[in-house]
Each structure stands twice: as structure tokens, then as C-alpha cells.
Amino acid sequence: MIWSRQYPSRRRRVWSWALYDWANSAYTTTVMAGFFPVFFKQFWGAELSANESTFWLGLANAGSGLVIALLAPVLGAMADQGGLKKRMMLSFTTLAVLMTAALFLVGQGAWMMAIAVYTLGAIAFSGANVFYDSLIVDVAGRHTYDRVSALGYALGYIGGGLLFAANVLMTMHPDWFGLADKAEAVRWSFLSVAVWWAVFSLPLGLFVHERREAETAHWLTAARNGFAQLGDTFRHVRGLKQIWLFLLAYFLYIDGVNTVARMAVDYGLSLGFDSGILIKALLMTQFVAFPAALALGWLGERWSAKGVILVCIGVYALVCVWSSTMQHASDFYVLAAAIGLVMGAIQALSRSMYARMIPYDQAAEYFGFFNMLGKFAAVLGPVLMGVVSAVSGSTRASILAIVVLFAAGAFLLYRVQEESGPA
Image (cartoon, rainbow, N blue to C red; front, side):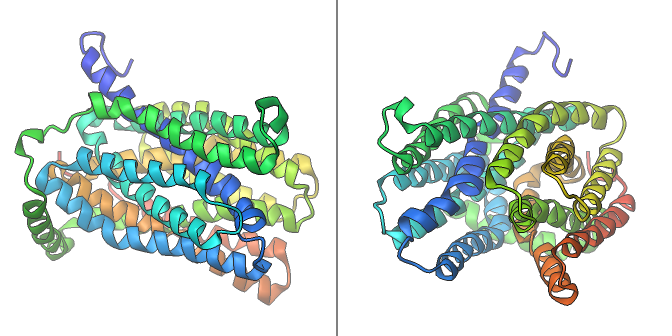
């Protein structure tokens, strides 16, 4: 057991923290990956050309990612100085929930309003994650980081998958739910995500507390001290060699992971697979990832987080190689299952390994850097795929380019001393 029966308060804190992954993963599956891109093209931006709608959607994703990437270290430093991690996380979560609910109210053809609401929601979603990740040091002991982090991701996959499955069913059979058509079903799906997110965030708000809560500072004082702390961290960067080596490795291999996630559907369509097959594969991946994340999180604690991450990177590389040769829908399902086995673990164990390496009293700031690199990820991968595709004239060859990112990330990660961080 992770937690002894003698410590029910810790067990409650851990599950309350992990349930936030269950809560916000509905946004990534139903809104970001599932319905918003399609609904934007077909409902809000129907008057736009395909190229125009793609441009505005890409701009929204890139803009929100850039904003939070630039702000994350500063916000993290503020939260550390003021003991404000939980308060700032809940503030960003509230904004994200409100923006998600607001999508229900955006009328047909109002594509500019849809983009504005989506962008604000995406920024708030990512901002909340900076502080959520850093709160792991307040709810778990160092020796349980791996399994606690994996528990969060596992609950996220099953929670997001369950609501997404229900939302897909709503769009396939709107009459079963008393809805007029698919468009109304999608709008109600956005509202269901907001309600789901708000309800399952309540345990964290009630039962998770920062250990430095008594030292909470005023916002302005926290901002001033946070900027000073951020500058001090940069000045001491040479003394943090292992941390920055890990971050560089993480940037490379998580770029490959994110590229696979974002390009898989487009790649499948380019090979002629039916969109229904791709949606089913996406759902299957979510449910495979649930038990796999728990199992590999336990293995990371027993064996080595770095070792399990390296194995996961190897699986991703093999998936890319196999993808370049697949011919049938059954191949796509097998590859989706393979990704499901490792995608939760590679993210969960990266978070827990990093948590052990960083100073406890600067957790939010350091997770700001962690999330900043995560937001800049999925940049090199698509570029490599585009270049290789243009040069070779082969879509299949382009997927092999991502193997370079996994190889470089694995090489650097292998050189990281896992337990070199401060106690």
C-alpha cells in the first residue's frame, strides 16, 4: 500500500489531488482534441475557408501556449514566495471552467468569439496545471511520488475517457438525450465538461493544503519576491546541471510524444483510414492508459523512474517505425494500444522524477520551467515531419523523423543522475 491505514488524512489528500486529473482531462479529450476543432470548422467558422479556419485555430493554440510558456516560471516563483500555489491554481481553474461553459453560449457563425473564449480557456487550463503539478510535493512523500503521479494520470485517462465516450454517444444519438441535433449535442457537451471539471475539483479545494500556508504573502509582495527568486535561479543555473540536463532531455522526448498525439489522426486520415476508426482508437487508448499508468508507476517506484521512462521512449520509437509500414485498420488499433500502455507512464514518471530533483520550497517555480518546455514541445516534431515529407514526397517517411527526437531525448536522459536532487 502507498499509504498506511494510520494516516487517512494523507490518503484523502492524495486522492483529492489526483481527482483533479480526472476533472480537467475532460477538457483535453472532449474540447481540445475532440469537438472544438471540428465544431469550429463546421459551426462557428462555416463561412471561413478551410485554410482560414485552420489558420485561426492554429493561432489560438499557438498563442495560448506561448502566453503560458512565458508566464509559467514567473507565476510559479510568485506562488512559491507567497504560499499561493493552491489559491492560484483554483483561480485559473475557475476561469477555465467559466470559459468552457461559455462555449455553450457562442452562437453559430460567431467564430471570433469562439476563438477568444477558447484561447482564454486554454491559457487558464495550462496555468492551473503549473500549480497542480507542483502541489505533488505537498500531498505525497518523496518515496511515493512515482505512484502518486501515476495515480493522477491514470484517473485522468479514465475520467476524460468516460465523459468523452458519453459525449460521443450524445452526438451519435442526440434524440436519446432529448436534443434536436448533433450541433446541440456538442454545445451541451461543452457545458458537461465545465460542470464535470468544477465538481471534481472540489476535493482538492477542500482537502489539499500547502505546508507553507501559514506564510501566505500579499499578491504584490509575492510578485516582487517571485521576480527576485526567478533571477536568483537563473544566476545559479550552473549549479543545477542535472536538473537542466533532465529538462533538455524531457523537452526532446516529450516533443516526440506530443507530436505523435497531435498528428496521429491527421496521419491516419492521410493513409485513408475512416474517421470512425480513429475516434474508436482514441477512446481505446484512454482506457488502456488507465491500468498501464498505475502498473508502470508502481514499477517506477520499485525499479527506477528513469529506467521505465527509457523503456517508454523505446516503445514510442518502435511505434513510429511500425507506423511507417502499417496497411490495415487493425494495425492502427494495435499501435493505439501500444501508445496507451506507455503514454501515461512517460508523463507521470517524468513529473515524479523531476519533483525529486528540485528544491521543495521552489517547486512551483521549477514546475513553471517544466510546463514551459511542455508548451514549447510539439514544435520540432511537426517541423521535422513536414521537411521530410516535402523532401521525400512520402507521408510514411515523415513519421520516422520523430525517432530522432526520441533517440536524442533518451541519450540525454540516460546521463541524468536520478537521485542527484535536493532532499
